[in-house]
Image (cartoon, each protein chain N blue to C red):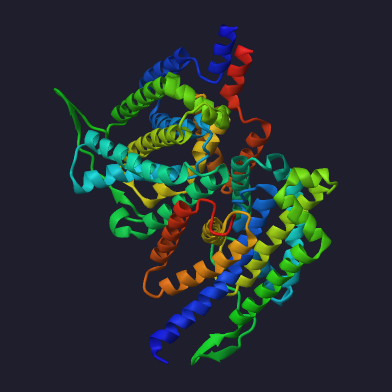
Length: 321
Length: 286
């Protein structure tokens, strides 16, 4: 009896060894891959961090936010502005981006998380739209549509100097962050706090009756999610070596939802599958058809219709039942 | 009268007239949410589609006024199957409807971009008469817009509160399950509501087309404003939505005289945050 209950609880989590194997594969691929494919994979890994961050919010606690572009853009500008104006190195700049994510997530979370589902969706969407307007308007700060470009100093680790201008270094730099993000988030998901997050998804009312402060845990999930989204934005700005108002665009709000829905909500590593599929889709289809967003809309409608479990969620539920 | 006062009054009237158009759109949004539980992210794009269609009607048939009849008919024919065959499975799940309507919004925007093109175009003012209003030459078309919007709003009110079908809609709004149990054909009410909401948005688009530029992304700005209006007025509260639309748009109009448009929008946003903290369910809901 006890064993069965545990299995039911674990149902949506990805087996860790599979993910570690995949990370190992990525480690080898960095050397093998040709140049163009390597940069595509680098971008995908950055998106994977955003997807995992979003999964904490939507997949674990069932808070469907349309405002994650704010964190993504905030993280990017955390890196860009701190490097331009404070002349800090790359690693401190990433801390600035995490800080930006934290501050934005706390402000937005305190206002939005308490509200009911419909209000939450709408208010996060309004937050995104207003921040996007500001990013476009305040050109003296953000550079607007043209953006601000960066000169990257090298990272010195003891005797070695690493320059992110080298694509291979950039690849492994991002991979390191991806691995650490996964390990940290995996730890959170499997901790007692993670169990509470999942319970919020499954039955929020019941948890309230049991005496948990649901608001606090939802806010916590929202903030964790915001911080990792900001990290992703910061890494993206470093990889592209610039930041523009585009980092606040709707793309970064809607893509995480699609990744998570395709890959599997609440599976943490499942959205990686979504990232891979959607990135390849965009890479090939956008070159072939200008109005590929029509197909994108149809895909959104279809995934929602077929199943909310996603690919990995489906595989895992097959294995355990 | 001192010049500053005239300017402010002028902006206030401008804001009020824009507020009437926004009220049409936002009431459609609020109605659709209230009855069906759909957070309609594609509502702004239906507004845009209304404007684009009226551009085509004006170009092909030579008369802007025909589009006031033809565009609602087209939107009626398009939105009824959209509700029945596309949106029906998601209704009631707020986040799912939101994601699904984002998909629909992409489809509409790209379809318009592909056919109409990405360049903003203007419809020639269909009623080039100006009135002398407070010593300023005020375009008569705007007064006409106000008049038509008020007519539509009164018509909607008569429909909802004075006809027997309106009672069914309001009953479904209050308690869908109970309404269904009382023998109301809820499916029909759902389609009707969605069509009414969409037609209101499209009419807003038609009326706004000669005032604003017709552009395939013009819905994005309006959907933001309507959501703010609906949040302040209270989701699903039609009276609240109307009052919020009029007051917010005139406030924004007056603020735009001293601030830049983005700063005025930010001010509205701050008003919304304050309302939300004090009254999390909007100003006009019990």
